[in-house]
Amino acid sequence: MLSTFVLIAYLLILFQIVVDLFRDSDLGGGFKVLWLIGLIFLPGLTAILYIVARGRGMAERQRASVQRAKSDTDAYIRQVAGKSPAEQIADAKALLDAGTINQDEFAKLKAKALA
Image (cartoon, rainbow, N blue to C red; front, side, top):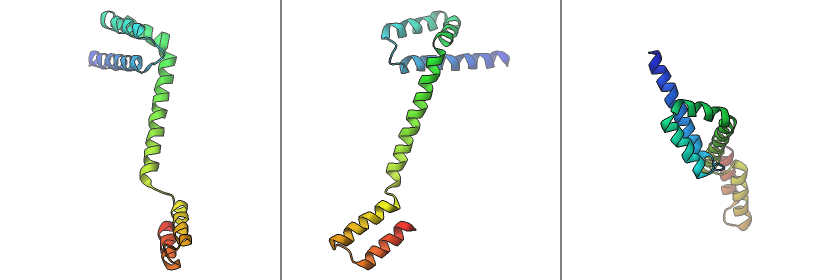
């Protein structure tokens, strides 16, 4: 059971390292290849060296990736949610001023926006 836990933990660390290698745009392709070759032939030693040497940058890239995903999600939710009540009332007021709708229709649109 302990060996299974250690193996799964090791595989998770290797997966995180490989993902971080491909996420890092500052690291050149040659260095990425060298790290991957090291992970293939001396996986344990290379994983420890990678975490020691590049662990801080790894955490910063992960944090930036999470922040980027959160901001993308928030932007998508705002886009899908539609206009705010103030924007809906302003649009209705513009229609009223243009004479497209009458005062009763404006009142209905306003009440609907505020509901």
